[in-house]
Image 1 (cartoon, rainbow, N blue to C red):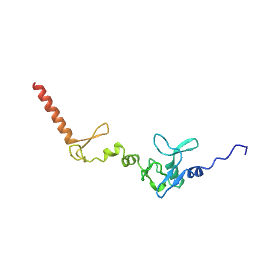
Image 2: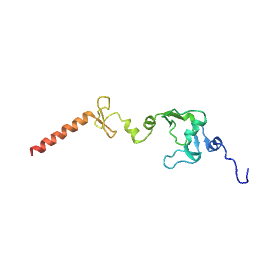
Image 3: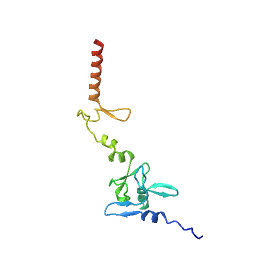
Image 4: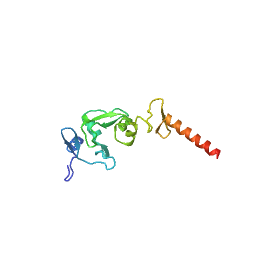
Length: 150
């Protein structure tokens, strides 16, 4: 081998040397993406998510169309026991983002339940209560009638 040229360590060696194992989580100590705050490692010139790499390194397979959810809610954790393959929608709804918080609401602001028969799904993806929509429509018609009398 020429002077100054060395063989790069294997992915497993590079990966595990950047993992700090605690009693529960295995914390990634390497590069973190500034936007997503997930750990990344370069494989063949491409950035890969470290929790996905960890899952695959221990021999587990992520089914087609699924992604890994951190059960521990720690984005730096690469412990395969803390990762579960789920559909994207389930992963989002398990989180603490606005979509997840909104989906957990079971009643409209006036207290009517969002159920199979009382929920209207708007074209923008939001939802409304049928009872409240009917009330708003009736109030609108009343205002129009009052204005037409003037």
